[in-house]
Length: 31
Image (cartoon, rainbow, N blue to C red; front, top):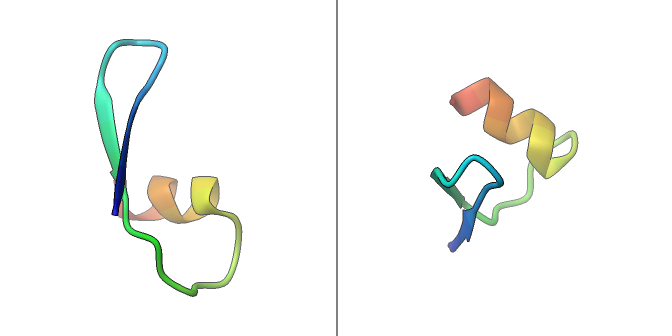
């Protein structure tokens, strides 16, 4: 897992798993 701080100052967590699409698309899908 990686936690990154976005420009807005909000922390987002990305779970590193093998899934179709880009990490950005996956994050939007689960957000």
